[in-house]
Length: 398
Ligand SMILES: Cc1cc2nc3c(=O)[nH]c(=O)nc-3n(C[C@H](O)[C@H](O)[C@H](O)COP(=O)(O)OP(=O)(O)OC[C@H]3O[C@@H](n4cnc5c(N)ncnc54)[C@H](O)[C@@H]3O)c2cc1C
Image (cartoon, rainbow, N blue to C red; front, side, top):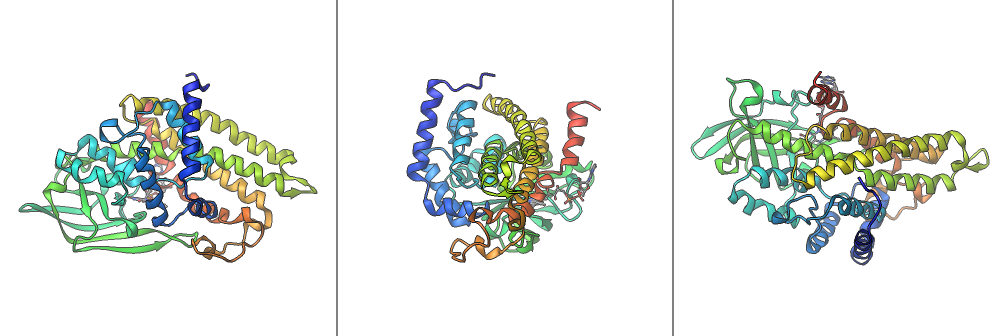
């Protein structure tokens, strides 16, 4: 694969750079720089700006609102996006359920849901995990029983990120208990405002609220909200997970973090010298850079496959493992670089209206919180141990 930029690529890079310079609101950039967790109103505002430019869903087919970019253009876009500290796009609609709807949904479902995902009027969340079904997802127990033109859904989901901010949830439910567990699962789209849906918060160890439990008590869901065939949900669920895992690699974001580590390590001192001149610190950072380069090439290969209309497939598991390991290593290096100032953790500073001066240097704000939050990166999207099982079984044939 040729990784050098052509003249067209360079022109495209300038176009992206200029667009972000002109259109990315300064207050959203400031919020991102305080914390990787930005308020919903900021996300909606920025996502609508991207949508107006036609750039909200680079991986979607052009007929549904994608950009038709080459893998290299997507790569350039991601680099520029991260370099400017733009916020992560809410992935549940664009990266996860959107591709399921345009691949397996019917025309009505496409008409109803794809525009509102693209223009960020509707936010989604993911109802896969349950108290007894995480790694062993196919053991899920949330039951959906047909009653006339509806399913009646009863059960519980857990670790549902952003459920409190979501308008709809895509859910795996059990519709047949007589067959092999993977064969009795159905994929439903549920409006969170439906009677009988209750969301309860779970506060994570960084002190913030993005996780939830979601309870379903006799929730009536029209049959028309079912994706494709009853009891075939496992197929659609796996397709979605491939997209989710491929998106977790976040190469461009890690590059930006490395740049940030360098900026901080030039300012921070160890034994009277800039930390960047400390041999063991430099060696640790260089190791990460080498691994990131390998991840970047693998990611580009996968992006080329996705652009050619292929599913990310089981190879996404390798990206998920490497990407999340690098992310955690980088977060640890950042906190290490801060020394004592890595420790204070005033949760109030993440509020958009926060005006308290930071404890220690400005660059220390939010880094410990992100380190705590990203401990979960090797768990969500299917734990890294499970990804190793997938690689062993489906790629290596062991
Ligand atoms: C921050 C966060 C956000 C999340 N967001 C969502 C969301 O929005 N929607 C959603 O549906 N879910 C979400 N999840 C749930 C996530 O997908 C599950 O936590 C994950 O799949 C692991 O399941 P579990 O927590 O039940 O752990 P378990 O399955 O109980 O696993 C516990 C440990 O055992 C290991 N293990 C289990 N089975 C095996 C095996 N066969 N071989 C080797 N090791 C094994 C696991 O790797 C793990 O280390 C989120 C989780 C977190 C932490």
